[in-house]
Length: 383
Image 1 (cartoon, one colour):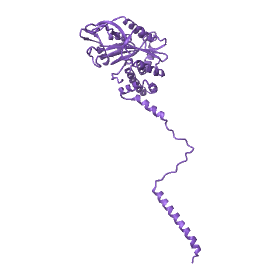
Image 2 (image 1 turned 135 degrees about the horizontal axis):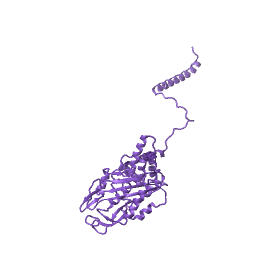
Image 3 (image 1 turned 90 degrees about the horizontal axis):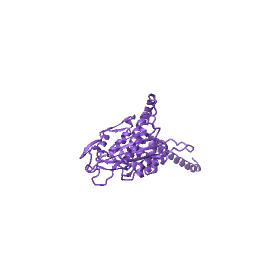
Image 4 (image 1 turned 120 degrees about the vertical axis):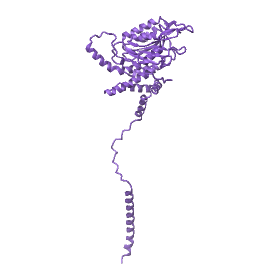
């Protein structure tokens, strides 16, 4: 027989063993039903993973606004951001990146982008920056041509040689853009004269380069219609002087009749006293431009002085005649510029603009035709 005392002690021990056994079994069943997870390593002494700061992400978004495939939308975006310091800096940084390229493919891609921006800035009437961007697309080709020519020609005395050291895009373009944006708020062409134009360029600074742009506003955009009601269109030029300190100055101006009577400078009364007007804010449909020599630049200024004392004549000495002479002095030829109208015949904005639209222009100096900037004819998207 078993001792009663032992029986009393044995029962609690057995009960405890049964409870422990059932808990272990349940835990094993639960573990078997769960997916296996490896134990986490100790990371208390390891560096935290890098997280890109919010500012960098924001900058990426800002940069992307200048990569819009739609020219009209991009033009509007640039226009709206010209008076914002941070956005202008982003734009300048983007343009400077386009100057860089280590391979043929990269250079070709960047050149297409720079030419596109040259067109957009021209449409926004930011002519100095437009021609700077264009210069980047022809700079390497011209350097190569000059080296090749130097091997066969020892004469360095030709004033019409195309020689430009460099036109870098930098921080000064940022501030000058802001100034230009304010000037262009003027809506009407105002009277100017040779003295005002010449004084703009007499800034006492060493010059790096000169450029000319030839603008045409047709009576009907994209059509050779000589007039629409009383509208006969307008032709004007822009002269740009790039300084060695990365600043620049420019003037846009054209030749006008000084109207004193209702029918002045019309087919019924074609002659009138002439005057020059500031066309910095004037609209246009077609434009061609190029870099020119100092000698050509001075010739055009002398022509401007001469025109300050000439009468306007609708058939023989109008706005288009003045600009065609200036273009000729710059080594730029525009073909097929004349047509007839009631009681008259001569060069006019409608025919000249259509000729440019159809590729009727070429260089007459040593520069190749690829050195002529031609703006694409897109609708202005700025309000």
